[in-house]
Image (tube, rainbow, N blue to C red; front, side, top):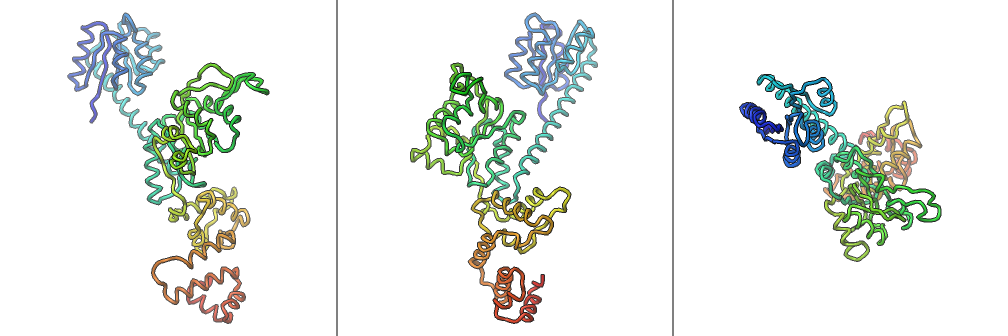
Length: 450
């Protein structure tokens, strides 16, 4: 069990020593302060579970110590000791966050009981906080669908990185979910209560990017009728994602580097520096290291952004997640009040063989399109784009591995022909060069009647 630490602040040596002695006999680790200012210095340096402070002290009084304790150690409980027990004093202390107050003179047992109750509340509050943190972490990363080992490792890293208030570079191909990773990092971070702002570095001209990021003062340029805050200022205390950071112009790279170094910026047309209290995340589908070595991206900015790098794998490297993702998108895009559709096995087989140059985003578009064209029935092979079906069939024919049996080769060939014929058995029999009865027998033999 962790050591319980208590701070006792009282300018009267006898009271301070007596309280410290009683609490030490109870097994607590006790630090003593002879004044309010000394107590605040100790709070700034050390962590405490409980603070007992006298109300009347010559420099900082008990209410001021209470306020500083709540600012410096918000999880600590505070008990105010007072020889001037009035209802007004008690109410004021409780309103400012004190657990309770104790009037002098007090009985030893009364002190012991009150301290034990305050520490019990501190312990329960800590347990609730930890449970909430775990729930948020679990629900947060669960938004990133997948059970592939690479994805599970990425989820674990996201949880760890989220707690570190450092810059993160998110790498991956287009459509892999880099912005989702950035949002989850923000939602699991200590900055979660503040804003998350995303800016696409390839979507603005240099001039527009400057005013959008840093804002501008009234009269800074034609049309600037009034001052406007930029994204960095609007996200104060929160997180800013620079998406497609590799598209950022060189001159803007210099300005962003200065924000990272100085933690401050100026509006366009302004003369006063504004603090930049933000966490910066950057995402790119480019090889930024290679870009920096070739002079297309500033090396100093690259190293500033690349404190921690996360790689989001392409969908072709996690094909075992395709069924999970496909069913997730079916549920996501289901019409209100309609039964959620399923994916027919043959359609799922085609989906699982495709390479997805557009990654998860392309899979979602395919499922959404199929549902729009056929909103009520299960998702069938015919609902999939023709190029996907052709690419999947070609991939199946080229799959390496053990040699299949002749029967398996025939079964696959019949499936491909039936697919080509759109399920028309007469047409399929013509392509195969057999009669319809022979085709029916083969379908029955291989369990393909449906």
